[in-house]
Length: 77
Image (cartoon, rainbow, N blue to C red; front, side, top):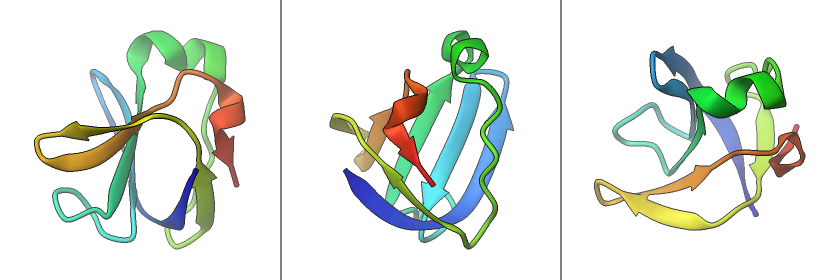
């Protein structure tokens, strides 16, 4: 589980990205909800500068740590 302040929530065609502490590409940690999981998870209401914890397997994406979210329970506001 990783906790931090939401620096950026960005929706693109592939999905929704949550960047902690600093905006991408300087984020301390990123979390992504791919488009195919958005309907199951529902709308994620996170405000910038709010604290959040995200659980899951940490993987490297382009040299930066990232967690893929596929269940609502992985996000703890």
